[in-house]
Length: 476
Ligand code: NAD
Image (cartoon, rainbow, N blue to C red; front, side, top):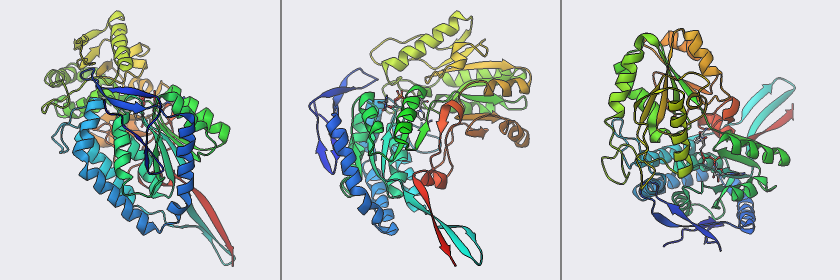
């Protein structure tokens, strides 16, 4: 079986110890992944540090042009990399058009777009103050070396979100992919490194412990982390120890509120994908649906009709719409949460029965009859299960949306946008979508509040977040 390699200082590097990457649709081993040693983590950081001054000193236009070359590499290898995403992560290959299933090809298209857009952005010098006596300019400087840690749900897209703005701004990067989805990222970085100077992007791989060596190293100037809340807290501690900043994109438990005037049939498809994109394994999926009692039944029915028609299977087979859950831990969590709902007296509208192996397949599941405080409502299920909760008064629904220690996204569904906006402004979340959910965009800042973390990615704000301000103050 092939062993895939890390990229450190432009060289392909293996390790003494390796582990197998597993296909969640079949249980088959796909390849071997190095477990980076502590020494290799230090080497990767040293390589990034050595490469950084020259990288930052390059003229902006040159760095931008190289980033466009990176985008071309991603485009040229999109099929190869999409297949790795499907094999390792499970999502179907799908397509990239608005009417096509958003899967791995969509993820790779996103990687290209989220490379081209930051490549074209500028952070011009801002004049903070000027009068007859002085002029104060704010310049943006790269931090230096960014330590990035990624999760398994959108492995390449999230890696790109961490790598690309960082290098665009003149930083260099050491990234550790999730141990569940390493090969795609190692291959992505191997390929883009062919057009980048050595040491600009480096990878290390292995379990969480390898990530902990990265984030606790004093050679890291800023940490970018996307993953779970408990790990995020450990990362924040490591960042505090070295007094370095961190962007933490953590879990969510997004509420979607359907107002009484919404049209169940018209919104069903948007709600469906808002909840079940990537089998619900998306940080900003709708994970609790609050529906007004006047349209509760038709809304549940419209979602049920969609849920029961989506073909599930191996994502490499064209025509598959839903793949497996990515790993056993997540699968067991989904099974346990649905079981807890059943025991709480909930109605399983559809799904709810594990399908048996091989692969971690679990049917799309809609659950009614639950209330706030029940586990499936209060805990992030991160899987293909949606609790649908009936409410009477919109004040109740807003209170429900705000009661948890999570604040990544939320959505409000209504035919009256002004009314929806009034509700949206009262919801505690980094983004509140109206009549859509999870619709991120490379120019629009994205990030969570409360237990969902801090800092934003994307657009100008995201680019600023991988730079520090430096004031040049001139006496006149
Ligand atoms: P996780 O926290 O288990 O793992 C994420 C990464 O952290 C992995 O690479 C892992 O190896 C590493 N890690 C684990 N322990 C570490 C430590 N002590 N020090 C450093 N690194 C360590 O998360 P996951 O299960 O891979 O991802 C799922 C979670 O991520 C969900 O909660 C989801 O909502 C969240 N998520 C958030 C966003 C967002 O943008 N807010 C996006 C995607 C996923």
